[in-house]
Every structure is written in C-alpha cells, then in structure tokens.
Image (tube, rainbow, N blue to C red; front, side, top):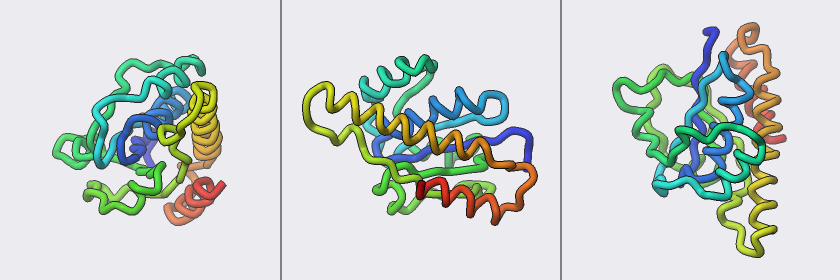
Length: 163
C-alpha cells in the first residue's frame, strides 16, 4: 500500500453527509489522506447546516462544493484508493468504473438534510451525522493499512460501516 491514500465519499446530492466526511478526513488524516466527495445527482450547493457544523468543529470549509462523481471517473482524476458510500441511495446505484479498482464499502448514515422540524432538531441531525462520521473515520484511521492485506482491510472497513 502507498504512503498516501485518496478517499472518495459518495452520496446522492453531495450536499451534507459526504461533505462532512470529506472535511473530517482531510483534517484528521492530513498528510496521509486526501478526501474528496461527490454525488450521483449533485444538488450544486452545500447545505448551510453542514457548513455550520464543520465550522463549529473548527474544521476548514474552503474548497467544499457539491460536485458530480463523474469528475472522479474521468481522465486526469486522482487515483482513488477507497470509495465509501454514505447514503443508502448511492450504495444502490450503478457507480462509474473507478480506475485502479479502489476498495469500496458502504457506511450508511441517516440523512440530516431530510429532517423536518425546528432549527434545533435540524441542527441536532447534522451534529449526529457529523458524530457518526467522525467516529467511523477515527476507526478507519486506526487501521494499520500498510501492514494489512487487501482482504483483511476490506473486512475491517465493512465492520466500521456496520458500527
């Protein structure tokens, strides 16, 4: 395995969960990981509640944008080592061919953008999604990636997605 890994987080709209995951991994995995996010049907804008949650956690928001997964399947795109779906809709969709055959896993996370209610309830949903992703990314980062074989890594990543 390489010393540096590229990770793509996928969701349908690329406006909340995948954006949160991108920000968390780029902060926690700085130097060893570069995280990206994309959507199968991107909304074209990041949810303001997601940006507020990222800012509340004192993580940078510069460069975060809603984009299509086609950007990562085209020539010149970064070589991906891992691709994680974070919503059930994206997990069921036919994904593009990812050059290099990255390891893939599904980390289903409840959609905070679907929550209707008071501003406090909506903020709580975004905070909960952030917390789940932060925990899973922390577990992912604790894996001894360089020392494990591909199949063992895949089992561990799948287990994290079920936690």
